[in-house]
Length: 189
Image (tube, rainbow, N blue to C red):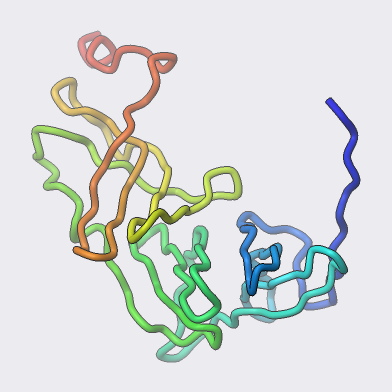
């Protein structure tokens, strides 16, 4: 291990020092640090210059009105400053907003989940966090999570949701590793 320099970011009285969601984001070939800011005055995503530690931009999130994204935001993905995907955990929904926080689209993932009685897989419950950020490859947003509900021995429990923005489908992949035990044996006990 090697001690590395640390980085500080300037915060004002409207910035919470506690955040659960962060993302590095490149703007005009410059790497930026972003964080979800939630406090009593409102919510936004702050964009910081890495070299100075100063906030240089933000994405406003509305608390009320037609552009209210809701109070259950559990992660975000910045494609660009006018395409920010907020993830509403309770609704299993992406809320696409622009720089001003205006809602462009809502993508309800739960409508694309397999039927509860699907014989193949148990869908994961996406739960983004700083250690499990939303990622994008091509037109697919990748979310990590956990198995939702109880599964039976015939269905494979998954932890990854792949949301394809091109064809509006959701696929589930990646089962729990063996360290969690044989799911079939767990259900036969």
